[in-house]
Every structure is written in C-alpha cells, then in structure tokens.
Image 1 (cartoon, rainbow, N blue to C red):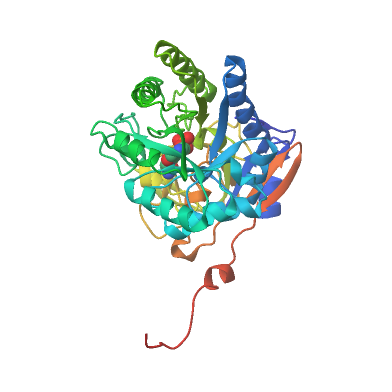
Image 2: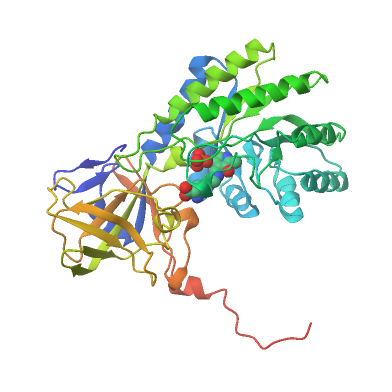
Length: 434
Ligand code: LLP
C-alpha cells in the first residue's frame, strides 16, 4: 500500500522511514500514517469530478480518524469534512480548519452542540429528524441567524455489509424515511422556515461497500425525490451521496479502486438529472474509510506466546482491542508482517492475541508468519480507519501514539497517553447534598 517498501536493512519502511526506527523512537503500539497516500486518495477523488466537469465537494468523514494534524492536512488539501459531535467541531476549530467547509451530521445533535456549531461557523447542518428541525429553528431565531441545511434521507437501500455498519436501509435510526413520505413532510416543513436555507439532500447507504449498484439505486432515488420537489419550484443545489467506498483489508477483499465508485456515482447522477431535465446539482461525497484506512499501519511489539500443540499458536502483542476494536466488534480481518522481515517466508501459522483481559481480544486469526521472537515488531496493515477513533482505555491501557510519515521524515501528531492522563479525571471528594 502507498509508500510501503522493504528498505536496504530488510525492514518495512513507510514514507521512507524505517518502521523499526519508528517503534524505537515512539514506542509501541504506534499508528503510522502514510501522508502521501492520503494526499493521493484526495487527488484521485477530485480528479474524477474535474474530468467529468461537474461541480463538487469532497468532504472527509472525520469519524474515521481525526486529530488536529488531520484537519490541518484536509484544509491544506482543500477538502471539507463532516463532523458528528461537539468534540469533532472543537478539534477542527483548534486546527484552524475553515468550518464553513464542514457539514454537521448526527441523529441526536444536542441543543448545546447545535449552538456550538452556529457560533463556530459550521457551514452546513444535515438535518436528521423532525425534533431537530424545531430545535435548530428555535436556536436560529434566538441568535437571529440563518444557516444552510441538507435533509438526510433514508432511501431504504440495504448495502451488503456488516449489519452494524449498515445505515441506509429502511429500518434505520438515521434520516427521514423516503417510502412513508417523511422526507417530503420534512421538505415542506423546512421550506416554511426562512432561517433554514435548504440547499439539497444527503444520503449514506452504508460502509465498506464493494459494489456500485447500491450507490446507483441511491442516486436514482434521490433524483426522483428532487424531481418531485422541483414541482413546487424548489431547485436543489446539492446532492450529497455520503461515503462507504470499500477498501482492501486482506487479499480476500475485492473492492473497486475508491475513485471508481465516484466515477459511477457521477455518471448516474448526470444521466438521471439529464433524463429528468433537472439542473445538475453539486455532487458531494464524504468518504472516511477509503481516505485513510490503507494509509494507516499499526506497529506492535511481540511478547508472550502460548502453544497448544495441534490446536493453535497464540502470539501476543502489546496492544489489542483498546487500539483496534474492529476484529472483536465486527470480526474484521486484517493482514500483518514482521517489520524486521516483511518478505521472509512464513514457517508457521499463528493467531495474534491482544493484551486485554478478554478472550475476544484477538487481532488476527491464522496468520502465516516467519519465526518470531519476543521484541520483534509486528506491522498490521490497513488500520487507519476506525481504529484510533474508536480506541478506549479498557483495562486502563493508555491509547497509542500516532505519527505522520512523509518523504523520509516522521512527525508525532498524537502523543501516547500516560497513566496520569487516564487518572486525571478521577475525582476524590466527599459527597455533597443536591
Ligand atoms: N457519512 C456518513 C453520514 C456516515 O455515517 C459515514 C460513516 C460516512 C460518511 C463515512 O463512511 P465510510 O466512507 O468511512 O465508509 N465503525 C465502523 C464504520 C462506521 C461508519 C459510520 N458512518 C467500522 O469500523 O467499520
């Protein structure tokens, strides 16, 4: 993936930096991001739109991985972002990210978060439900402000993916249901509220999707809806089709190249809009995983081992479900190599255990690996999305450090958490009567 290579010392290098040197300098577990690969993905997405000659916006779904340095990279590359919490807005603000280029998502944004978004200058609110329409309108009335909004539509399309990361199907907590007419009710309601400047619609059908037909169905459903609304004189300026483009975790995964999904979306939207004689709206996408997953590699130090003859060899590392819960939560599959011998022939099949007190804390099952020793570094690939962002302090293990590497240089972007960091919110006071 990206700039990964075997260097002269025979070690895995990323961005021209030796991964053993990274492990030595910053400790493990460590998450290493190949910045050049993130930039490449962004450029590829943009190129599709430029070639098609359509108005567009590439926004990154912050939830996949975020940090001040990440928002700065996005700003520098001229991409927008979606935010889903006050915490993401705060981090973007700290980074100096131009929040006019951010869309705020969520099925239960609190009043405090909506107020914060307004005062921070978030450009677009993606309205999810009827309660939120009233809540936002009240806040805007109080502030004597108005804001751009999109309506999040649940188009009733089930994309083939893990049940927990399916989002666009009819029985979903997200968005205004299309089939029962809620989407059009929401449209009418918002049109009657002058402080809500309705710019268009949004849908997101799921994550880690390998086929284009779900996107085509979603695009078609959205255009059909806009055609209905056009009869009232409304012209949609924005059609946001979300993210969800799949990535290759292991050789068994056969996704398209990320930009191919976008190429297909653009083609279908253009065709459908032309057929319906609808002015072509700006097309927005919000990829998360496909922007950062393959750019991320987790480095762990190998420790203990347990051999069960004829059954399994457990090889344990110094991280696990606290820095990557995806295997435990979704049975997600990964691949890995020894960083000191990435191309050595495997001599055994091992299963990589985490260090957390839970039997389900296994990072990888049945991995062919050369002979490993305690102290060796294991490099696990494609961990850049939903790893650090879903990290926890389970067992009071500190969260890992994160580095950006590019052109032979490394930059620490998130420090390793300390024991003191974890204990600092603990309070030791006597009770008070309320
Ligand atoms: N837009 C919206 C409204 C979303 O809900 C999501 C992801 C995205 C964009 C970005 O989707 P992506 O391009 O990353 O597939 N924790 C799960 C994934 C949850 C995705 C939630 N929504 C995992 O680790 O697989």
